[in-house]
Image 1 (cartoon, rainbow, N blue to C red):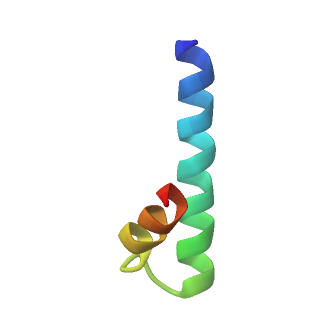
Image 2: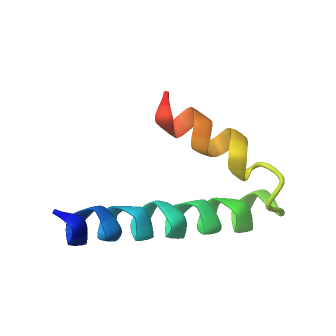
Length: 38
C-alpha cells in the first residue's frame, strides 16, 4: 500500500510540474492542487 501511495504521489507531482510548465510558472501550483482535491 505504501508503494502505491508513493507512486500516486509521484504521478501527482509530475502532473503539477507539467501543469506549471504549461501555465508558465509555479505560482499556480497551490491553487491547481486545491482544485484537484475538490
